[in-house]
Length: 342
Image (cartoon, rainbow, N blue to C red; front, side):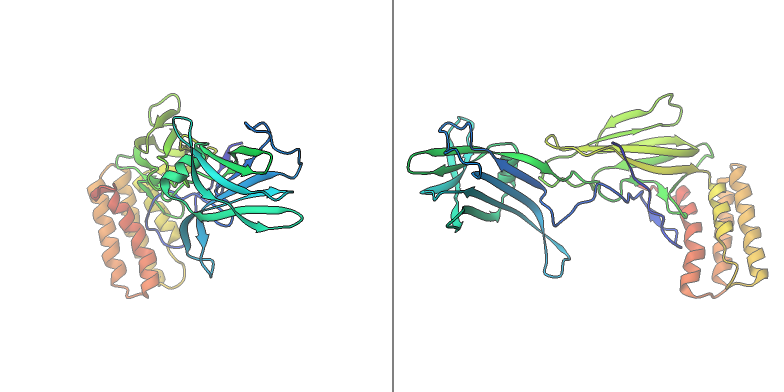
């Protein structure tokens, strides 16, 4: 089922921003990133006919610090075998390309006597993580009359995870908007370089969206892609895969608007209280001139009017927070025309 992700709306300030996602999938640092089961039945040497003879493992990329934050990367792996009888020895093994096995670690007796537990926990190397999730690890338990082997099989996992930001060229003008430079189309860069894979594997990003002039949504498999969108509402879809596990599709909503529309938003957001009626009228007049210039395609003149608005606002000697709230949206619009966003 497709997971619909809403964009975070920044409160008060308009700052340079990429589209953020708020919603599933979210990483749970207290839960394993992958967990494993071991079924010893059907191995080369049959085990005793016990119902309560099994193994399980848990891989955690992160551990919580004493206070819960920050998260600490540990790549911790915990494994145990549960047995109703005492074993002579137990190991974790890695299967080599030629079919032979090498010992990874011995499993220590950690509990008994009614039920016996053999376990070990340590921090994995990147190569060990790759071998583990590729299905190359086995558990072996040696009894007096049988030698039991079982494969560590993934039972569930987390990730890969969407990272922030996932798009550039968007401005947080009380929502997320791509501002057009020509009143017809706007550029948006979809960026998956901040996405995270819990197993240190390369992430493949599959982007889908309806680009300008396209009769159907495009699909591109790249970490990053730049696209042009018509004025209006849009949905970009991102799906991640590392070749072993994948995520559900994640939708990213944004709107492409003209610079004139962006200025109109700024006018509507001007505070009613805190500035005099006279000053507010003057600000509206300047901004209306900027919007009119932008709507006529006179982008240089529109930016010049916004610079006039900024100078006028600075002469009002307001508190720093109010001044920032009034100036940053204007600078965002100007930056559309004078900066290479990426």
